[in-house]
Image (cartoon, rainbow, N blue to C red; front, side, top):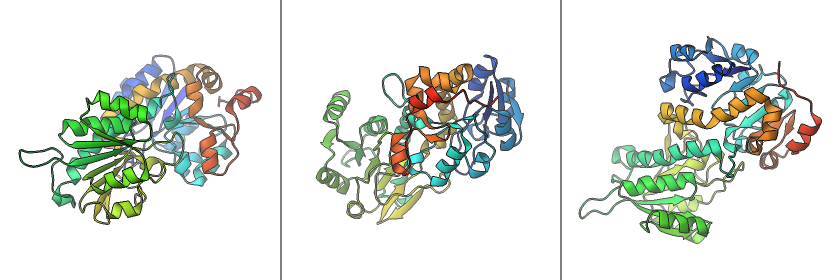
Length: 380
């Protein structure tokens, strides 16, 4: 099967859709892989490495898409890229359609392609198989980012995350006890900060208290508890996730106004709209802004700042799904893997994700029913 890897816009995305090792796995199985020139440059993977892995390097997105049955990307496709797609092609990408421009969804539907959204794919345990890996990176990075922006030269409070004799450590509040929240808590504790973890799930809080040997404080996610914790935070990490849906604003602007001057908000939920009312998406080349004296870091793809690590991790997570589709075709692959089917949000001109359909006021179609009525559509 023909598989194409598109180059990302380096201003907003540094990861590559697949590493050379991933390409070699596909080509050794008999697939043809096309890589757009310099697709891996920001992750320090050269065109020569991709060629050595068996790929053919081409020079334009049009050529990549026209040659390929499966197209791989990290960030959502641009309008220019979408115009080259044809019926029956398969797109793998982080799409975040619940908070995207309606034009993107409209074009995906009109093109009659199968669009697989990485952040919705689940494994056999019901975990978000691909997003979990990026969330582990984001959780670790959140504390690196916090430590940096707490410096006074970055408009921060001029404090360390950890403590010194006679000097108390920073207070870190983590909203959400999923993968991002758990990882951020681990790193914050390792750096010597005090941590308050807030979540609606008592069982999850109980498990994490045990995991961290009661070195953290926990609270149930009520407005009163959130308001109290946020007011005293030096660092606030927003790590709220609702599968496929827009994140709720659990931190209001009024709460932000009550925060300490120079405190730092890292809204990791921003890729799904953000869980802090004052948040707005930023980019790696301009990652922060000040609002009410509080530093806001709201980069949707923060894992991209460690592009080589993130590319390798992304490849590890997505390669089994790409191999299955290349071997069996999209329809059989999603029939045999319910977790992959969860990631399919557009199929044969229909929205097949109920949360996305609700967010965009569309009709949702049951994917299983469509598969019984639609003939094999993959582009030849």
